[in-house]
Image 1 (tube, one colour):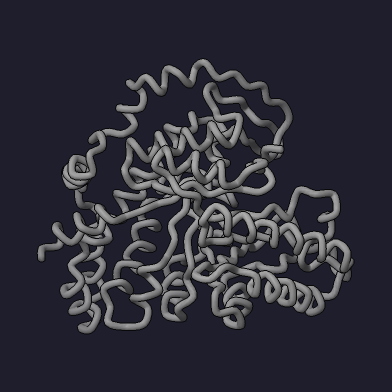
Image 2 (tube, one colour; image 1 turned 30 degrees about the vertical axis):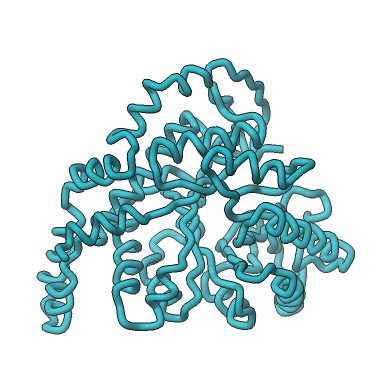
Length: 392
């Protein structure tokens, strides 16, 4: 099979989850700018996600954030999504917006607060059961701001105990994806600051794997090397796809450093094609967008993110791996780099157009959306937003 045919097959089976919070108004610490047509309820978010999937063909699930997306009847929401060609994806507990979580959640020094945090996460596990979700995506804002504020090792023990209780409650066939972040909102220390800390905790939990958010690393971090290590350990669970310039910017994926995204995908493809245990890990990785579209139209930003992810994925499959391996074994540094760059510079637009025709979606999803009746109907939505930060 030619490299192009391999890339085409990979693109046809590529799936990327979109987040409910990417369709509603959100903002920075300074201001939330209301975008005309932004979804106001979870029902509208599901409808928008269904429109994105209809146009892209690669986004058949929507992640939920609790309590932002809370409803009275979860089965009703599951069925509502199913009628629109979607399934409920990862369930994301919120352990950072309650007044009780000022000093942390699962790592909080007060047992009462830790129990409250656990109750919320276990509620989310029950939501997984009802909606059919098989992923619990957990990010903690836990950390400290001052030296001496709390005991590092005790906090780690509290966190490990909480994760063990959550892990024990997971439905059969489901996974816990544990996310890390090197700073913010704890500026002195973070309880889960890096992939190694997350990996150490996941090793004790068979159903737990590490979730890599592309914006959660210090500047200059070689994320593709992190990905390769987690694949080798069999503990890479998923991605939150976005882009960053300085910190956790949550920009459109592939918009600031497309070469980094390509290199990350190269590691994933290499593992998938290998005759090693890493292949099985690569094949079950969950791909999810996690972005804050603060100044862009929501659906348009999501479609562009998916398109950029498709471009990177296609190019990663076009790498001539026998030639690359030969150059690496010979120590031919420049030739190895040239092989990689040949794939990165490939024009994959004709291939993507062919894939989209086969998927039965428009060759230019963004242009199709702009010309659609759906885009016109969004103008009828009205919303007033003031202040800043996350949706309430």
